Image (cartoon, rainbow, N blue to C red; front, top):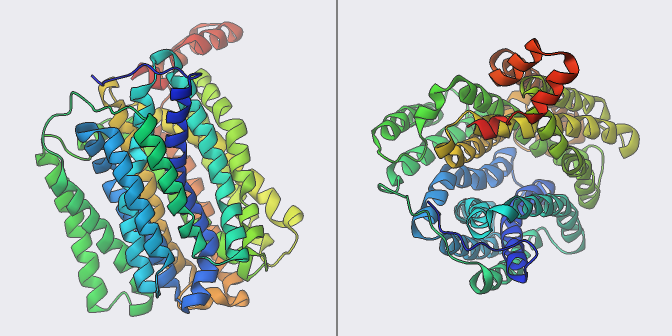
Length: 493
């Protein structure tokens, strides 16, 4: 049972809470997107290798993914506003460290620390809305949070591109300092404290530590392997340590009374298949969005601002179609969309192959981005709903967190391994001719991953039995009407 204050959507207090949570989660979201736009500039500034650029991205994702579930548990136990505010302050201070970094090593360390702050604030933003608003207005508050967060995601690459062109890449981090101060003021003055009163057991620190070590070791081996050689003793030992730690993580989680990652959820086939598809699709997405901004700037000669603007269709299409996609999945079941959507995503990635080297955005990149975005809009809403619907009602929150965790792990691993698979190493990313060839290979790989994800979903996902039964027993129009009235997968959980 959670404490609630019953805020209303139209009240001034309610809008302050929405503003604080949107700005807070938006900081972490924007930082993820703008760094990708800045990678070529950062690479030139530090004469960095591909491995260094990978660590600038994965260092942040590593701690964010590994500590995300722990951050949610800390908020439930010690107070969501408290942990949210600590995360905001931590994120802002580490952003300053990123901006002042004298070399690439210092930047990577600061990014790792920054990911810890993101892991503290990210789960708290949505939990605060869930606990603060009355049941009647909770949906509207979460919808506003989602929509405004989408606008923040769209503005992030544009803002980042502008700051890089007008000032320096360092300002994509410095901008977080005044934003952080504003969020802290809003939160301390207007956000009510809440905590989960049914939180029991000890915080799963051992699970978080072992899990983070496993991810770090595997990421290190995959990133350093192409340059040091996968046959080098160091890489072999680190990869082995990562695999052993991964096995140990399973045993640690099984032994915990309140595990960070409840492995029992994966006994449900629907939940396991959905998260498997999540891992594959988000790996393809993370890998593609790591390489695409670099390719646009190095090969297609886009400015940082133009590269950021090229990603706007992704957010616009998602905002326009995601809700409708979710409604359709609730009516007909998720199997069709989860099978078809990843294949459409793969088609969009494949369409990027001939765009390399073209200065024309309208005839080159835009068609591919529209197809890519359409595929994600078809996929994401039913995928998330199915992950929630496969878990018991009392585990809906942790099921959502696990799905988020799996998505981030997929992105982390893809950024670590995709450049090696595509042949991008050293400073080859700075040479248009070499990068053009390697980019095409990367898009073929990510497109194939998405198609595989779609096939797995089509074979493994099952529609709710009520939907299937009603369609088989009723005339077409009656079946559709009853399916529309039937509960969604999330409601059935």
